[in-house]
Length: 313
Ligand code: UT7
Image (cartoon, rainbow, N blue to C red; front, side):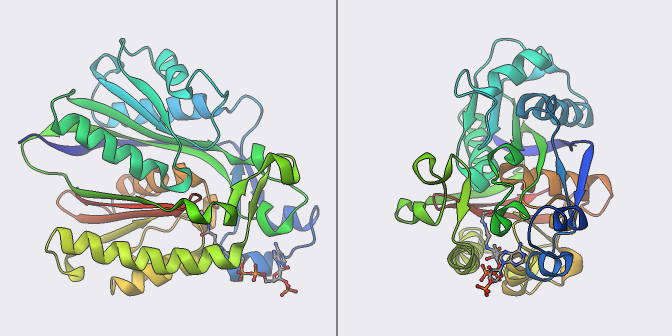
């Protein structure tokens, strides 16, 4: 059986940082409210030239370097994004052109905040079935372009950025399992609806919060059960970064102290499909995540979609 493992990670964050204090000047909010309710202190906001494709390509290049591979080695590019640069062609094709990879499948996945986990699942199965040896899985977002900057209930939450991993065929499993779900009955709770407000994110935050906590608790159980693993065998939680309180609830479910949880929401805000690979890259590069560690990746977002991956790094 062919397995797959993450052999390189990378990221790209826009240069401009916007603090809570700066937002206090433009909407009726306070640094204290944002910190206490979300854990966010700042977010990166893309300039005109920092596009989904260019940030994604930069993160991908870093991941390829870390894996000691060249663009020539790539057999497929999967880009998870909610904010493609154009409706078509797929932004993954633009990334392919930027990187200069040979002709290979390249496409976008739209599963909002769970997109990276969806991409990882697709890449893993592509490798397992002999489709190729090396896949780039990227999450890249410029959410600032679909945020209503006059709506205090959403504009303080989101940020821009990109994260990427290289997934390679291996004899031993790196990715132990992936789990994907969606339930379209809740689409109205978190959406971009052109009819309602001019194509900006709108969210019933409170209801999404409750669903996220319950659903992530369930998927943690499902993931451990599928691997016949005890929760105490998990070394690191690498969660989607929407709200520090949601992350803490999932950590409690795993009985993990917060020191074993990778938290970037304070620095990045919610970067949707980019949040999990951004967090993963950070903890790999600062040496917290070590070879052999067991990682629980999870995400929940619009759709609703949700998913998880259990990984032996
Ligand atoms: O990534 C996809 C998944 N997304 C999520 O998981 C997000 C889930 N939701 C959340 O993280 C939280 O629900 C929020 C952070 C969005 C909101 O926190 P909350 O504790 O649920 O607050 P709330 O929506 O119940 O609002 C409480 C109060 C309201 O005022 P009243 O009605 O009590 O007077 C809001 O108007 O806070 C007010 N409020 C604000 N006040 C200051 C809402 N936004 C702000 C703001 N600054 N930015």
